[in-house]
Length: 207
Image 1 (tube, rainbow, N blue to C red):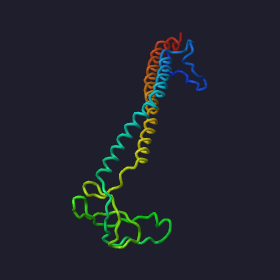
Image 2 (image 1 turned 180 degrees about the vertical axis):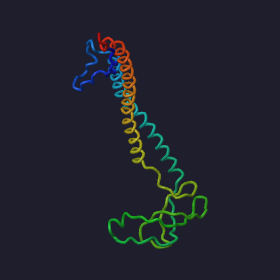
Image 3 (image 1 turned 90 degrees about the vertical axis):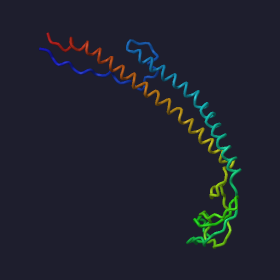
Image 4 (image 1 turned 180 degrees about the horizontal axis):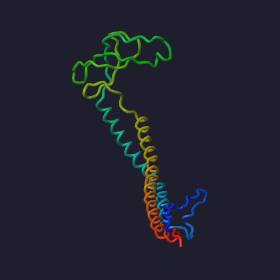
């Protein structure tokens, strides 16, 4: 009486404490094990080489971009006086540290570089009265904006981009290894199923 062929079982799990076993010759090592080892080594070397290169390339590109942005902002923005249209709100705790840091949005009017009188909102200190004068940054289109980027801000933003690039390269390497590992595992399981289909019938047949 024939018995039902048992389902194929995957190969035993790897023991994490066995290091570099894929590089050692042994009868149980599969070709895909050696391929996986070479892929891991290749990606490791590639990540080591690409990380500093990516930092330098991205950091230098970002630095030149933000430096040019700062130059354009300096050339097109003006720091001009503006007059409050109404009183600014009073802080509930005048003279406190919080009051010194607090700013309230207030409507102001000013004259841009083309001689046009404009009205807009800007943040000012508490308790300023109407007709008080503050200074605001205005861009080439007469809109209130922030000050041009400073040299320190340019360096900080460029460094942030370089660090982000340095973090991205290892993540891409890990993702590439995971993708290759999944493909190799599917190949191994397919070979295991094929081998089991040939070996299981004689074992499971009673005589």
